[in-house]
Length: 96
Image (tube, rainbow, N blue to C red; front, top):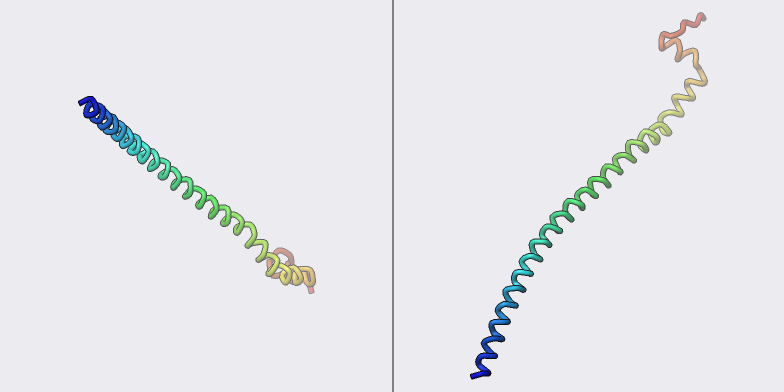
């Protein structure tokens, strides 16, 4: 008889421990889901930040590249014949 009582007590203890473990696992899963949702938000924020920094760099670099390509011929014309450009703009009338 005493061995049966000890056996039943052990079973009850295991049931209690099993219920506690189940409760802890459920709490852990809920917390993990919260952490996962926050991580997704952070990941999205970092992606948007990277995209915007690339756009910012392009806004600065593209006009500089275009200026290097298209500005020298214009400046050469300006310095070679400034009177023609001033006459065409209507700012100055140069007698011939």
